[in-house]
Length: 459
Image 1 (cartoon, rainbow, N blue to C red):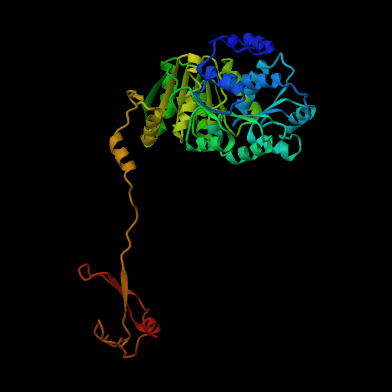
Image 2: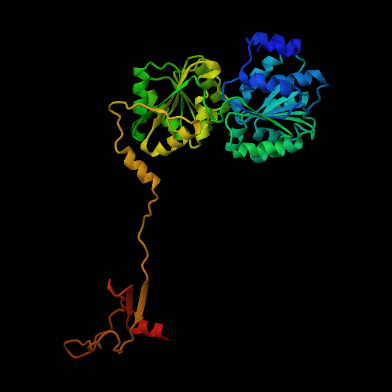
């Protein structure tokens, strides 16, 4: 099905032709028509299937069908997205769609000064693309009001939930117009996503382009078993042997990303990192250099799992498996986009085997293991059994009892003899000590007290 069959505004058709769009993807075919009719939608589709056009084109068309004057600080449409990178990417794409329309687009995200964003809001903008945290800041400062927002898009809604934005999202939704159209898009689904959909959507239609939480058919998956301490060594060897030219590597922590970059730097491999400790300017430059092939390796944490659209990216490497199985789907969604082939490679230590099992269960298919000679991992099955079995550590408590024996008493022991020196004088009393007696067959351990301490306990 062609975009020309949609009867969009001539300005939109001209912009799509400039972007090289002709045939629609499955998610675009299923979502654009009902969205243009004003229907609330919950759409689940793989990353890289054209979701941006699926929600942006009907929103822009509806704004064109019902033109209104631009009002300062009061946008008509709002798109919420989880990361800075994705906000920038959406702003670039949607600005391209709207370049022949009398509509303005503004992106609001953290990591940059607020002054320039505040000036654009003051001048008036029709469509705002924002991360929830930065938008809340602008609202608090009075830079923007959402009461005129007629169209809301929650892009990558599953990721916003994972990142803890749910409270901000619900608060922002309450500030928009009561009668609005809401479109919820995500790459994966879960009970939390469905619950959010029921809270913010009204009489909505569900669209699932592919099987839930599936990955693109064009992506080939592989796992390399390896000890955690040898992952950098294995990556460097594969990089050289297989001549990987442009590789996106995901780590679980910022520290792991920095260590990997340092290791690659020693071997003169051009690499950059992209994580939360880097400024937005540094992250933007790293992504731009990677896209322009100035860098061979881009190392990123989950912050870059969404929003990176790199044409022709062949390899995604999971240096560590993600904590959430759904994040595996988002990570590898950076390759195999728009029908192109791609490879998703994961380094899995023995401790990560259970995480791998959860990922395979989520995507509904086993992942091929490749045992690299020299990097074999022993006793994997034994360790798996140990991990799955709950082991109690520490000593078990045993019941004890204390028998109090008064000085001079014959109970339990014979009366002690007088303690005298060779000259016949009494010695000073020795310190009172607890004497433990243990009889395994008789029952619990018992403590016996003597002397003054026994007298104190007997009172």
